[in-house]
Amino acid sequence: MKRLRIQLFFLLIINCIVIASLSSTDLSDKKPIKKNSLANESIIIDLDSNKDYLNILIQELGDNDVLIIGEEHNDTRGHEITLKIFQELSNKYPLTLSLEMLEWHQQISTNEYLEGKISESAYLNDSKFWSNFKKDYFPMIKWAKDNQIPVICANPPRKYANAVARQGLKAYKNFPEEPRLYPLPQNLLRDRNSIYESKLKDLFQAHGSHMSVEHTILAQNFWDAGMTEKIASHQLITGRKVLHLNGRFHSDYGLGVAHRLKKSGIRTLTMTLLQEAIKTETERKIADFLIFTNKPILKEDGKSD
Image (cartoon, rainbow, N blue to C red; front, top):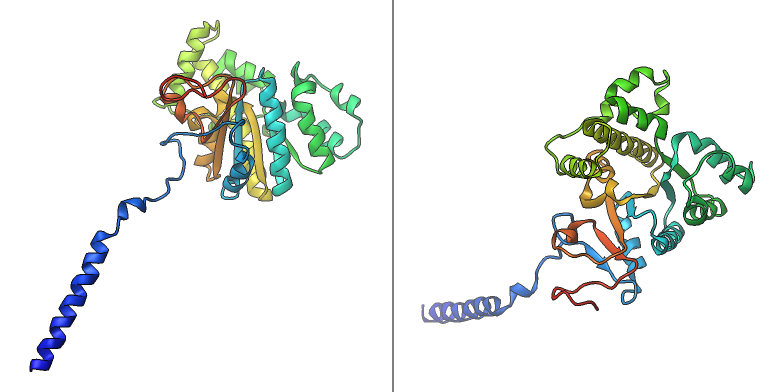
């Protein structure tokens, strides 16, 4: 009995030591790593100090299907950064390039150029391009051609979008009986209580458009739906990752094309290229990644780096 009491005594001491050691461990240091999302702040990339940003993007895209880069169309340095990102990602993954700057009807001539069937001059003279297309976007097409990378002409034809902006969904009555020429009307369905809807109303009312604001919002959804259809169908069928470039309003705050892709089950990252540093806390949620192309990043105290 005495021996049993001694054994129990030592067991009790050992148990107390174990409990004490566990309680002294600082578990507060073992915080889970937060995955960046639109609910949190963006990952801000300073190109001058963060030389490893391309590796960060490569790693993040590994777990996603699409990277949307939202730009300001007159941002020359932003175009250079986008080309560099495209080149690096295409060296790492089977990648497809998707451009808002090209319309559905330009897909045939784009494919002909990529396949070497027509010359550069023949391609550039085949149809009407954006005024800065040759300088700012064609270098991406050339890289795609040289490296056998598919290109999606993502934007539905402007003439149909303009018709929707003037007439609303009634415009579909006069469209050709070939639905592959434009996004289906049911894909233009809107959430009238959404943040996106509010932003569109504020934007178009501020511009004082002579067209109905309701119809203009429909036209914006027409573009978003069209780009989403092309990106999603290509990604799901081929399994390739997609880098999609559009004006930032189509993807900021995870709205527009980004929202539609995620709703379709496409794992989507967003990046926004800004010419000026952010000025409000709300702007810290614009995208998963932010790159400032012209000015230094503002610190919390309002001073620049």
